[in-house]
Amino acid sequence: MRNKTSIQGSWASRWIFILAATGSAVGLGNIWKFPYITGENGGGAFVLVYLACILLVGIPIMMAEVFIGRRARKNPINALSDVAEESGGSRKWGLIGVMGMLSGVLIFSFYSVVGGWVLHYIKAMLMGDLAGTTSDQAGAAFGALLGDPATLLIWHTIFSIMTIAVVAAGINKGIETATRIMMPILFVLLIILLGYAMSTGGFAEGWNFMFQFDFSKLTWNAALIALGHSFFTLSLGMGTIMAYGSYMTKSASIGKTVLTIGALDTLVALVAGLAIFPIIFSNGMDPAAGPGLMFISLPVAFGQMPFGQLFGTMFFVLIGVAAWTSAISLLEPTVAFLVERFRMKRISASIALGVVVWGLGIACLGSFNFMSDFTLFGKNTFDFLDYITANIMLPLGGILIALFAGWVVKDKFAQDELKLPEGIYKLWNISMKFTAPIAVAVVLYFLINPMQ
Image (cartoon, rainbow, N blue to C red; front, top):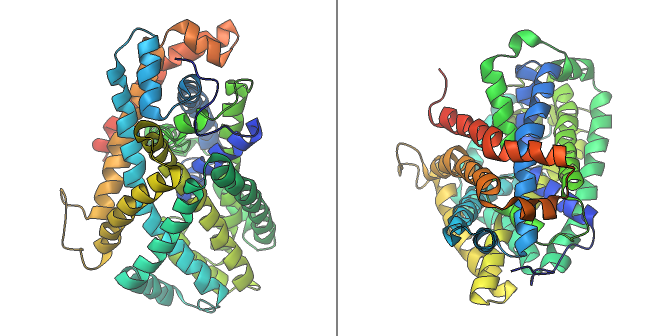
């Protein structure tokens, strides 16, 4: 079964893999969600619990996905099937890959719509359309955008084409080249915006909101939030990391690489919070605005601050880069499968998949206007796809990958890839067999049956 390289190619270096995987992990949720849940759930105390969850759950599952992909050098479906067969198990374990790849496709369909919103706001900021806007005006402008299917379709189409073009160009000319360009841009913009935030009057308040230790807020629900985010933030359960792992060189250390990705992902989220919340606090706005923070509160803040047009444009470019790198990773596993299973040319596979997800995206953008009356289980198309992927498919995929790595894969194969010291390997194996699946099962249960 062992293949030296994937037919798709391989990363030029370990750091390219780290940046590509970090780009996948750093998405829209990192920029606004993680800083907010940190502030609301005990600040520095929450960060400590979150880091413990990352080390006990997120990192071990990510290591499993990477080593399965690298061992087989194939797309998630074939990788799981081949590693299972090599270990004396059933090839039906490949069905985990089917669910993961389907999750990625469904997520992209609504993620591209949100990516389109970001592109629209880059243009609006750049043109000065939001200068001096009030909260009511910003809310009305966002509502008008959602109610305009033609505009949404244009931006959704542009974002889809941007993503498909990178995936179609392949691992080295496409994803790797995009990673080399976009990730440094993301880091530079983040540092510039952090410097800008430090010049506002709300930096101390923003810092205290996120990092002041408040153990009184560290409830069971806060721990559950930390556990859930530690899983979702690393793009686990959807085949992305497995596919990216299949392009990883044999000489690279999986343990060190995955720890670096986890650290970078967390660092970006924390710095993003320090860049955003001082601006929010210095304008007397609500940090609990959720997605509305990005498209209503921040445009108002930038519209009323010195150099707001410049830094507002930078902010939305930052968000756009984060969305783009994540979107690329959502499509790659399925394109890899189409190329390997049906011997399609990569450009043909990318376009074929692109047309499908673009069409699904139309149904999602229609949720806010011409299809607003259409519901599935009481939810519009956008919310329904978001719910079933985030609340059911991804956690279930994470549980099954952990069980597969812990109970099906032979120890000698796992250790051959991971090359961990014996004591650390035993801890990883315990995590796969017990800790991670139980922890993610708890997350799955409370996502379906939220605490009142």
